[in-house]
Image (cartoon, rainbow, N blue to C red; front, side):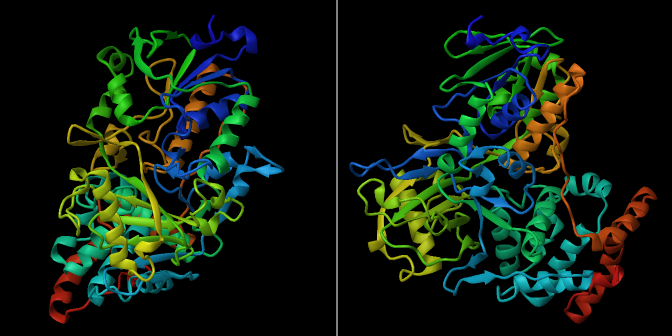
Length: 566
């Protein structure tokens, strides 16, 4: 049997052969967990490099040296990531592991047009009241009226004191925009609290994204910022491939995993009970005992033909899921840029920009040896809004040429940081994510991101499908993480591997899966709300809301939701 068509059980005892279709974070995570448990595994990846959206991409080549590092967008490992760092700790790299290449960022910058940038500090709240004060401090100085800031904090406290059942029932079908009542608030509230801080959450749009998803991630980001025991923001100490992906691929090869790049899956065959094969773009067939579908949602939807959906009906919901754009631009600078030691959020920028200056985190990576030796720093920027007109050309990013996108992003950065911080003279070169394609006057995106729109949870499949031998390892799978991210892909892969172990009845260690942690101080309030939910009663804070609004109109202020739980 050809390696391209898989290997039988005989070569690996009683372990079934598993074909992993897709070599991004989900696919490589599944391959790692399977191979560590003795499964024969073959991975098929459509692109020339493994790693999916997390991979590094060769950037500009300006001289005799190797190309400058480019990426789909900067890597971000927030404090609530648990599955992915655990997997990284098992990947050898030198005398340690890939997890040793994660370094903590110490700050987060909030920048707005025409005003000095502000850095968020760290506090340690111990009670509900202290949590309220700490969250209010985050919003200070943003021109949001005090009563509106207080109302927004009340909404966050509502989330923190809401039981899981109410979140999945009521908040899943409510947009974040509705939940925070942005429409009735001031322009500053809508800009900063409604749009600005939300759009940085993996291209989320508050007008369509579910309050459940945005709220849960918001709380995790706040928890990271307000709890010094958590490294809220971690990044890699070198470009992604050197610090993570390349050692990962070597580790998988050492485990016996067969890896095929430039090999796209074009069709799945099914008989109503199981997947009977997978067709590759060279016309060959993959014949395996199990299939792990680890391709992006838009590719999975194309593969979910009527025959496949009859075999695995839960895949029918894929066509109902929506995607958005969040792609990166790297600016190569001749001098280090003096921004925060962490990520920056340009919350009133038309294109919803976020950035990080990479050089400060790459102490042992010699940028001088790249290209013509003129680059000292890399400012990596993510563009999350491709539909709003910019400030330079008055066009959305979707309608711009590559050069116009570069110039527009640079102009928006300077508009927030000032030309003294980001002078034109320091710009050596730039690189736009090649997943953005320009053909015949149109702009396409080959790597969109899943958006958790209201009600979309019901359309998302579990890792284990109805097909006897098909499991899923991608960020559109139902997970605790519930966000298009590397962490969700890794968690989904763990669930997929556990499904195979359970279905085969193999005595093997199951993969660990963990839910989000939330501050223990809110547990009594959650238990109270769970009782009220089961009795058909509203959340205590929601029950008080009509009274609060009447009082608010009279006094022009905001009541304190914390009194309900103190």
